[in-house]
Length: 427
Image (cartoon, rainbow, N blue to C red; front, side, top):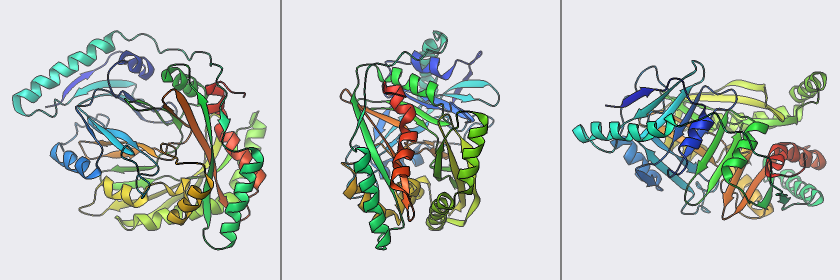
């Protein structure tokens, strides 16, 4: 029933996204570095804010995916705020659009397709809608030019809610709670804000040029925009296999190859960072055991390099239990332990005490759930939230016993660097 058109030559994802400007709820899931697929969606037929309603809709429209094509062939795409799975959740903390049309890129083969499902219609009406909607999108895509260049930055100068001294004092507060036995690890962040005097799309183009990332996102709705260069996948469900990929341990990139290698070797040898990563990987393994069987840590502390930082990444996986679905996994794992701490709920209490205000998008997720059943999501770090003419973003790090307050502040500044430059601040 799905109407499929291969796009030849395939448009650049940035050019295609620019071509759909003006359509509501435009979302680009942009594997700008190292990812296998990218997706572009716009103009959903419905917006869902209730998880149980979303589960019902996904069952209603479940269908077998077309083989040999990227897995998101229409489905639910949206955001989940950090506070969603807690008593502090706000009404708009969970928001998904139901999309009947998707543009999908396979970067491995260099091919792209437009897929139009015709949903939510049925029978002949579905076939007619699929063709009509495909033609609407194709007309815009045919007018695509080359990918747009990143414009020069404006004069925005983001300011933090912490001074360096205040952040170091907050780290000392976390260390006191660790010594008291209340928590083992807490991810503490500082938040930057500034007025925005340009189109958020320009901000995303600069961020992408400075810091291409495998789980990048540009998302716009009637209430917010997100411009993200996230390096971190949160959780993926594919054919019943659940995988999550916690990042713990970060250093800056070197100024030359020799320095870069030396910094990487120091990171790989850091017992503090490996202990931090191990805590989170083992916590996720134990939590996955509640919705999966055979949960296990399959890879521990591999090195991943990005444009401005390098990380230690582990991989935890399991097989989804019968009767469970991606929402069950989300409810157990969200928000990610890599950006809260251990134990998660106690760490979140400490975060609420020491950080100034809710995180909202920061450390939340943009996720997709295909009508074919697959699910994927990122962690919203290295991310601008744009609302009411202002931008905000946060950068944090995991505090464990033995953390050095000055080094922790430096780590947050390394993580914030690309966003500060993209916003117009100093390098």
